[in-house]
Amino acid sequence: MSDPTIQTFCCHHTGSKEDLAVKIMDEFNTESYNIVCLVSSTIGILGSIYQIFPCKISNPDRFQNMPVTRGRHIIIWLAVADLLASLGVLMRSSLWLRYKSIMPLPDDETSVLFCSITSAWTQYFYTATWFWTLFYAIDTLQTIKGRDSHPLLYHSIAWGVPAATTAVGLSILYIPNATCHNLKTVTNAFFRILPNYCATYVPIAMVMIVNPILYILAGKGVEVSVSLPLAQFTSKERKVVDALKLKFFLINVVFYMCWLPNLINGIMIWTMWFNMPVKIIISVWYIMALMNPMQALLNALVYRKWQTNGKGYRSMFSTIHKQLNLHNELSPLLGSEPTRLQLSPLPPE
Image (cartoon, rainbow, N blue to C red; front, side, top):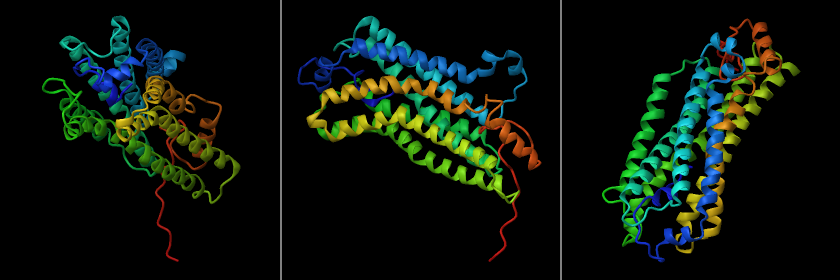
């Protein structure tokens, strides 16, 4: 999982019972937590692999001739980021389970270094998945409007911004001596810990706010593209539009399921710092440990569901494309490129 609270456990601590982190660890069953992380990250890795090589697994001959379209390109890189993030969770949890210690001992420099590196690795690649999720929604809307994709810009932002936010957030937290517990003043704690929370939660909140808006606009765009050229909106067109809207809705639901617990955790910690509900916080951590890596599997279900169904909505959308004399090519939506019509402006009323 990617969470700033867990990342603070990489810091040196005094071992004093007055240390909040030590208090939490006293009630935290780290073995069961790491087992949950191992199971969920393994499932996430399998989901990512299926997302990257779906046709090669089910039909090797078809995979050789399948073009990589703009939507498929984004899906692949989203899955790659998910795969690497899940590998980070798997490696960290395996070693934590082996050595029975999440929090390093007061003088254990090696554990601090390992914990900080794996935390940076996991946060970086999960942040990349949030940006690729955003870019899929942006590119879907761009496709429906008949506009070109910008893969170079997507890659620059999806890999560059997470590198900057992760480096800044964790550097402030760990440098120079990885002592982020028992800071003398609230102001020191505020400026030492808060930047890493912002680096984590701001991108999540951004995707939660922006993506639903983009998909609402995309759904309206599909309705116009399907119905306006024929001046009709039959049950066949309605099924296609409803299928697309359902897909958009499920993509948003999956993201909220996987990352809303992280936001809840952050809000609870910062609003209840002096009266921390430890048992509730730990329960949220278990949910995060389960749902964060599961994003890869759930993405494989919602992003690829209609693209592999040759007898369902995919063929229906292709039929409409033939009626509209459009190019029959794969897209990030149902498996066919959404309508790219050069619509003339409406006459003034």
